[in-house]
Image 1 (cartoon, rainbow, N blue to C red):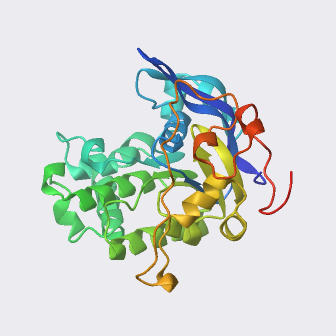
Image 2 (cartoon, rainbow, N blue to C red; image 1 turned 180 degrees about the vertical axis):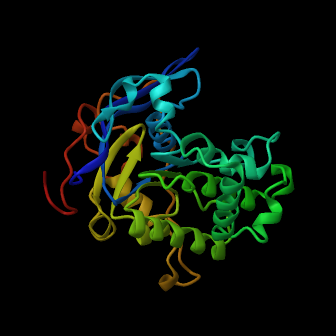
Length: 315
């Protein structure tokens, strides 16, 4: 666990109540994010990464809701805050880069109005000063001629540029915690490097803690201090970044790492996909949820999730 956690999940449970049953999207997640730390969260689509982070600011869409656990931010339980109190946290103390920039921006508001809004609401800046700072930050995330783009609407921007606008919106309030959900997905490698460098500067200058959700294990290796691996709504392994990459313990973590192509193996390398599909979240097994796909499974795994041991050890 992190020392001096600024954000802490304690047995968090977020379920979706559907006509086909209760989908346990987040099923007892516990993790800490330390001050100034970058914690990477990795796993396949549907593993619960995004829902875990949406739960922090209570933005889980219907029919989902938080049904258990605590979300502690600087000692306050966000799960129990009144909506008015939570509004003082959103966008100011905790910023979030949402996963889909194509649908996260309001098509009826200009880019300038949307990026400057946190400064107008929380810092009570004048509109002129807020727009000046918005243009400055848009330039830092790679928007060319940012001052002239403040009056444009989202449809005038490409998908990658909208992603950069979302990043600027999340950063403009200098939040204590930044939740970044696939922040570099729609960006080319040059802009991706600029954005990651901006995250590093925020961490160094302001001590910003970053919760980084991504499928890109290369980004995790270069950015994260620790990594949490999620599968079927649970954290199956958590470790320091170097330890996780050099000594993975959970079979799912091993499978994820083996699925990544490596330059040193050359063009003849064969990718090793993870066999099978993730389990139905409305009918999770009693034991290890990775049982059906695991090459190391044993009979007891159907009844209990074995504790982790180093590869090669008997446990």
